[in-house]
Length: 243
Image 1 (cartoon, helix red, strand yellow):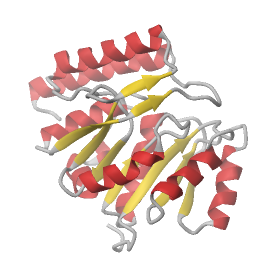
Image 2: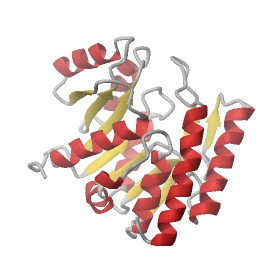
Image 3: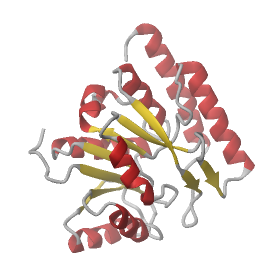
Image 4: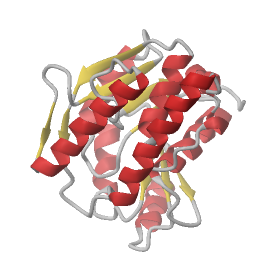
């Protein structure tokens, strides 16, 4: 583990073709939580997102950029970022999207709750939570995915697939990030499942998820197939005790 960091929390934001959002996300993050640090994990975005991130890092010592060789998946980016946070000695890690669907205004609430819990989930499906600008297809896919997770894995959380989360570093060490196999969106379910298997205290609080207004969604049929396979694999692990 790295030396203890005076700033306790690292916010990990994966990017791929987010040039229209990354500067706005940066400003909103530090308006809401100026004492946090930001790690942008860029998968060699062809639109120049990585170069914009580098400029932000030059201007602000709170920002660092991790460049990867190509598009390797959202879950893989989070794992890479979380390992970096552990190596650098941060006590908390926040994961959030770069497309403004996760409002940074919720960061102070997360940071308050993480003092009492091991994982905090910004939830679309608890009371006062919700979604904006979602079509019926996206809503139904999300609802089915959450029902599928609860049924197959026995999860009790309302939002099993949400990506806006805060973790204690000690929880990530218990999970052992080397064991994470999901590389795409299904990472969100896998890390929740593994956290609960360690006995983690998990809570949800309401957020309003706003569908992106710049760039394109990365959710596709391949991601949905991986999601289904990940849940089946985790179910098998729970039967065999191989988690």
